[in-house]
Amino acid sequence: MKLIILDRDGVINQDSDDYVKSLEEWVPIPGSIEAIARLSRAGWTVAVATNQSGLSRGYFSAQTLDAMHQRLRRLVEEQGGAIALIEHCPHGPDDACDCRKPLPGLFRRIATHFRLSDLRGVPAVGDSRRDLEAGLALGADPFLVRTGKGQRTLEKPLPSGTQVFDDLAAVADHLLETRP
Image (cartoon, rainbow, N blue to C red; front, side, top):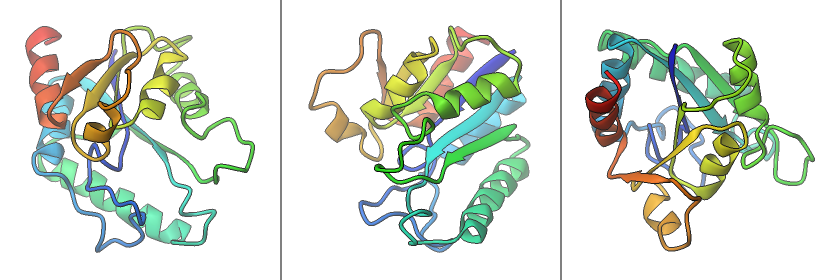
């Protein structure tokens, strides 16, 4: 199985320091939906791992989050692709969960769902160091995009082996060329 794990905010859709709180605020980054669909059509299994502390902070409801994810899935399906799994952490930074990135709980759930013992060789695409660290904990390959908080993330040292790309479309181009 060719599995790829994507962060959501800043990788697939525009991010906001004020949180993406509504369906109207959930706006895809140009090329991201098409990139997911291209990967899916080429045999990649696409999973999403996303921190959504706005739930615990009361900024939006579970129904609003579901509506955002339904739109994401529908847009990808309209391009002939699919998202196999979306895992989210609803907790805030002080909730002592194991799923809030940089902890690996979301990635562990994804590995378990696909019956994998680890994520060795699986691209984990994010726009922040915590996205990369969560994947690295289970052996994933770190891919940083410059969209979202990616430019800010580049100002500090990255985990060893991190590959840097302009956006998700560039990641898809790279993977479709090097891991067809």
